[in-house]
Amino acid sequence: MELPGTQVEPPRVGNVDAVILVGGKGTRLRPLTLSTPKPLLPTGGLPFLTHLLSRIAAAGIEHVIMGTSYQAAVFETEFGDGSMFGLQIEYVTEEHPLGTGGGIANVAPALRHDTVLVFNGDV
Image 1: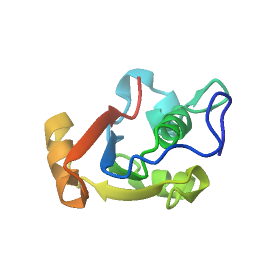
Image 2: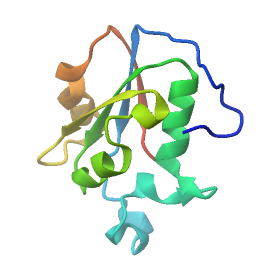
Image 3: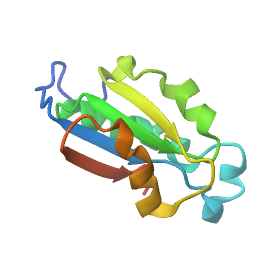
Image 4: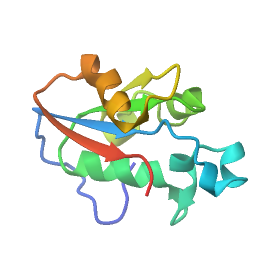
Protein backbone atom coordinates (compact mmCIF):
# COMPACT_ATOMS: atom_id res chain seq x y z
CA MET A 1 0.00 0.00 0.00
CA GLU A 2 1.41 3.39 -0.94
CA LEU A 3 0.59 6.65 0.76
CA PRO A 4 1.39 10.10 -0.61
CA GLY A 5 4.99 11.01 0.13
CA THR A 6 6.32 7.45 0.21
CA GLN A 7 8.77 6.01 -2.28
CA VAL A 8 7.73 3.31 -4.73
CA GLU A 9 10.99 1.38 -4.27
CA PRO A 10 12.27 2.06 -0.76
CA PRO A 11 15.91 1.65 0.14
CA ARG A 12 16.46 -1.59 2.05
CA VAL A 13 18.13 -1.35 5.44
CA GLY A 14 18.09 -5.10 5.97
CA ASN A 15 19.71 -5.22 9.41
CA VAL A 16 17.07 -3.43 11.49
CA ASP A 17 13.92 -4.82 13.07
CA ALA A 18 10.87 -2.70 13.91
CA VAL A 19 8.79 -3.58 16.95
CA ILE A 20 5.31 -2.08 17.21
CA LEU A 21 3.54 -2.34 20.56
CA VAL A 22 -0.21 -2.63 19.95
CA GLY A 23 -1.40 -4.48 23.06
CA GLY A 24 -3.19 -1.70 24.94
CA LYS A 25 -6.94 -1.57 25.48
CA GLY A 26 -7.33 2.12 24.60
CA THR A 27 -9.57 2.71 27.61
CA ARG A 28 -9.40 6.51 27.35
CA LEU A 29 -10.98 6.36 23.88
CA ARG A 30 -13.96 4.25 24.85
CA PRO A 31 -16.52 3.66 23.44
CA LEU A 32 -14.57 3.85 20.14
CA THR A 33 -12.17 1.11 21.26
CA LEU A 34 -14.80 -1.36 22.43
CA SER A 35 -14.96 -2.84 18.95
CA THR A 36 -11.75 -1.53 17.34
CA PRO A 37 -8.25 -1.50 18.84
CA LYS A 38 -6.86 2.02 19.15
CA PRO A 39 -4.11 1.54 16.51
CA LEU A 40 -6.82 0.65 13.97
CA LEU A 41 -8.92 3.76 14.52
CA PRO A 42 -8.99 5.97 11.41
CA THR A 43 -6.55 8.85 11.22
CA GLY A 44 -6.68 10.85 8.00
CA GLY A 45 -9.03 8.25 6.52
CA LEU A 46 -6.83 5.22 7.25
CA PRO A 47 -6.01 3.24 10.39
CA PHE A 48 -3.16 4.91 12.29
CA LEU A 49 -1.18 1.68 12.04
CA THR A 50 -1.43 1.76 8.24
CA HIS A 51 0.37 5.11 8.23
CA LEU A 52 3.07 3.78 10.57
CA LEU A 53 3.66 0.59 8.57
CA SER A 54 3.91 2.60 5.35
CA ARG A 55 6.55 4.85 6.90
CA ILE A 56 8.51 1.89 8.25
CA ALA A 57 8.53 0.34 4.78
CA ALA A 58 9.53 3.68 3.21
CA ALA A 59 12.51 3.79 5.60
CA GLY A 60 13.70 0.48 4.17
CA ILE A 61 12.97 -1.73 7.15
CA GLU A 62 11.68 -5.15 6.11
CA HIS A 63 10.94 -7.06 9.32
CA VAL A 64 8.24 -5.96 11.78
CA ILE A 65 7.16 -7.65 14.98
CA MET A 66 3.82 -6.59 16.43
CA GLY A 67 3.43 -7.12 20.14
CA THR A 68 -0.29 -7.75 20.55
CA SER A 69 -2.66 -8.52 23.41
CA TYR A 70 -6.12 -6.91 23.35
CA GLN A 71 -8.06 -8.12 20.27
CA ALA A 72 -4.85 -9.69 18.95
CA ALA A 73 -6.44 -11.57 16.04
CA VAL A 74 -7.78 -8.35 14.51
CA PHE A 75 -4.26 -7.16 13.63
CA GLU A 76 -3.35 -10.29 11.70
CA THR A 77 -6.69 -10.19 9.90
CA GLU A 78 -6.09 -6.55 8.93
CA PHE A 79 -2.42 -6.73 7.90
CA GLY A 80 -1.69 -10.41 7.26
CA ASP A 81 1.94 -11.18 6.54
CA GLY A 82 2.68 -7.54 5.67
CA SER A 83 3.28 -8.16 1.97
CA MET A 84 0.85 -5.37 1.01
CA PHE A 85 3.48 -2.99 2.44
CA GLY A 86 6.52 -4.92 1.23
CA LEU A 87 7.12 -6.03 4.83
CA GLN A 88 7.38 -9.29 6.73
CA ILE A 89 5.15 -9.00 9.80
CA GLU A 90 5.28 -11.41 12.73
CA TYR A 91 2.79 -11.33 15.59
CA VAL A 92 3.69 -12.10 19.19
CA THR A 93 0.78 -12.14 21.63
CA GLU A 94 0.89 -11.42 25.37
CA GLU A 95 -1.57 -13.65 27.18
CA HIS A 96 -1.69 -11.13 30.04
CA PRO A 97 -0.79 -7.45 29.57
CA LEU A 98 2.88 -6.92 30.48
CA GLY A 99 3.27 -3.15 30.06
CA THR A 100 5.79 -1.49 27.75
CA GLY A 101 8.95 -3.15 29.09
CA GLY A 102 7.29 -6.56 29.32
CA GLY A 103 5.91 -6.19 25.81
CA ILE A 104 9.39 -5.49 24.45
CA ALA A 105 10.86 -8.45 26.35
CA ASN A 106 8.02 -10.66 25.08
CA VAL A 107 8.89 -10.02 21.41
CA ALA A 108 12.67 -10.39 21.91
CA PRO A 109 12.81 -14.05 20.74
CA ALA A 110 11.38 -12.97 17.35
CA LEU A 111 14.10 -10.37 16.73
CA ARG A 112 16.46 -11.12 13.86
CA HIS A 113 18.91 -8.24 14.27
CA ASP A 114 20.79 -6.38 16.99
CA THR A 115 19.41 -3.00 15.91
CA VAL A 116 15.77 -2.50 16.83
CA LEU A 117 13.39 0.45 16.53
CA VAL A 118 10.46 0.32 18.96
CA PHE A 119 7.23 2.15 18.15
CA ASN A 120 4.01 2.63 20.03
CA GLY A 121 1.12 1.58 17.81
CA ASP A 122 -0.83 4.70 18.68
CA VAL A 123 -0.28 8.34 19.51
